[in-house]
Length: 302
Image (tube, rainbow, N blue to C red; front, side, top):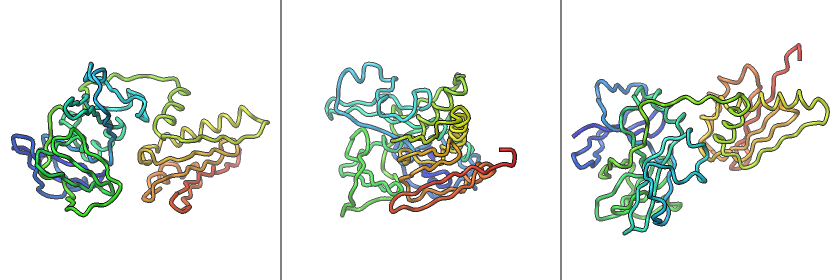
């Protein structure tokens, strides 16, 4: 038997005992402020389904030729070297192939906050296994997950159910072949500033539309300002939950930016802390949307 930590968010977590077969049993809730790995020496980490991605498709033999490869490139927001992913899991009997992935920067941030090492085996919550006879219904934050018996990955349910819903992952199993493949030594890649800038924005923000408004005169100056505001946004992209950005509109040659967000819980505390020296920052509500507004502060020598 050993201990596992389920990370629900940057601040909240749960401690579990794990039996020899990988079955989880809830012990207590913990938070990142007072969690001490020396007191609770964990041997495994489970990342909440709200913090990672996964996909399941019908079984195809071609998808499992190389199980260590990433097969959902068209579905990932980021480039291959910006994510950690699991091995490909498959079952011809269930007609299913599945894989999970997570942004590297997000996982690194979580590890830093919780003061834990990347060497600890880390598993996606959505790929836990249900060995029981009945479907296990688990609520992970506002997401309702269904774990069918022996199915390779959980399904997201859009509607509530009448059956009992558990808020922890007790009685689900960790399986060794579903851990994220995190290399012990990572090569650093170097990009030119322009490639890095546009790469980060396009890969991280999951942009659905990208609008630029500028006047014909002073084009080069305005283009530089557009790059500046993109650079500012790239510094805080981890504050946006995956898929929450609906639109980024950059106006007045880069002096102002409006980011439309599909996340009713979005907050701007950390963004203000990092960008308030350069921008006036405001958050407005628009029905189910939130609009983050950045207005450049005008300096005397501008």
